[in-house]
Image (cartoon, rainbow, N blue to C red; front, side, top):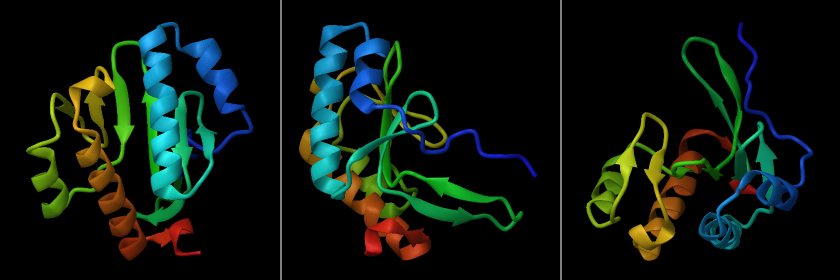
Length: 144
């Protein structure tokens, strides 16, 4: 069985941002996302893999037998856009996306260029909905 590449590391989050993010606006937005996701999740930011900043964790197990751990909420300040790992495919989240702002949907994440393009109050609702969904469907650090 394949080993998960995205696991929690000991890399310092601020060191990562200062060395990886080369755009001042993206640094500002990254720091704001850290502040918000920390508040909404109740967890400190940790690095997951080389470029994902995650908050909390949950354990998943698929019918195939593949299992692992992933952050409850997370983001990556990629060169072209942010990858937001805040979405659970359900009716409530899909409804919230209608008023979210300017974004693109990936298979497992939402892409945004900058925070000014989205509604932060909807971002909060999406994050809270995702934590609730993960708590209900997986072994979740948010239960403690």
